Length: 491
Ligand code: SF4
Image 1 (tube, rainbow, N blue to C red):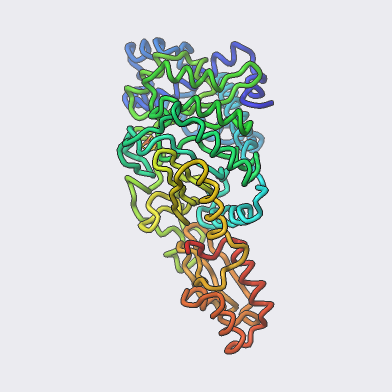
Image 2: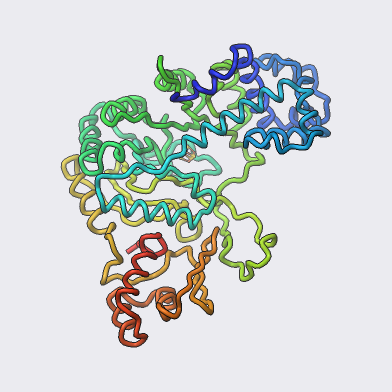
């Protein structure tokens, strides 16, 4: 079943009402510190209760185990049930949950939501363009190696469309830190060029890959008044319904129009996602929409003192070496948690329709070299829709070789730290340690690539003449390192 209908079908109407109110209650707790404190102390004031009621939270708070004394058991239960591990819980926690039917109901909803979102994660579709397909496979491998667990959660859309230049919002946490809004694509006047561009992408990459896109990137959807028209046009051409995340929650008419686009008779998509930047914004949204209306809409709380850590890129860049500065991996407990590293997700082309700029990019660990959490492989301008495919094809030829180019330096990715070992070498990324053996067959290949001073041609000559390494072995090993995304491709 598409959308969230399957989840809804597992509940009665009354249960769905209750679930929507619990969701709303927890949203309010995330934004309102005084309310959270009062709930923890079991001392909610009459005016706080009245405000909860006003926003549609009608259940009796004593029906949930809310005080500080219950927090651990409640978290244990919700965590276990959302990961389908309820059976493994202690009897004490099971009995505790059994006393609160609303907690069990909320747990059931979270479990279904978690399973649905997890099963929605998919590998990027194969492209009919072999060079792009191989390039994107390398990017997917590189991202997994560099970002670890977070890298496995990324869908890798092939395109991002920016319908504005800059962003009007200036969010304090923004990892992309775009400049102020300076231009908006005149959609009505230039619609034809967009249709032609999307059609070119279908021709070059195939319909599935062309449809694997984001309709905004370093932009806010609301900044372009024709944003929803673009969604409709894009769907007509590719068959794909694109997602939306917005930080503009005050324009209720626009939000309703957006929700209408995602709610069809036969399917209800869980978009848009709303970024809540302040308690006042949360109030506005909760006053404008009933809990049931927002049951399947995620409200992502982005207030400054929220417990969820931010990716330290863009406006809040702080360098973290992750695993790369650890010399000793024998004690796993001393390694600690590595931050998420990036919020980027596209491995492909960013197309800014205002400046007519195409950027080839892919997620990476944010740092001083790539502060926005994506690595840029090339940037080009196109003149008009006719010139667009010429530029795209040039980028494919220039940036997407199927083997390491003979005339370019062979180096490891710029996030990798190389370490020689007795049997071969280790590559430390921010999140992983990769071990390579085979010094007996490959000689100092790792050291030479780690030094990054030789082109592939020079490397081949040196390895054959000086180190007597079989050229076939050299080619096979280097190709494997290339295919697995370990080699630097920012030429
Ligand atoms: S998070 Fe989104 S809306 Fe906020 S500044 Fe960044 S691009 Fe703009």
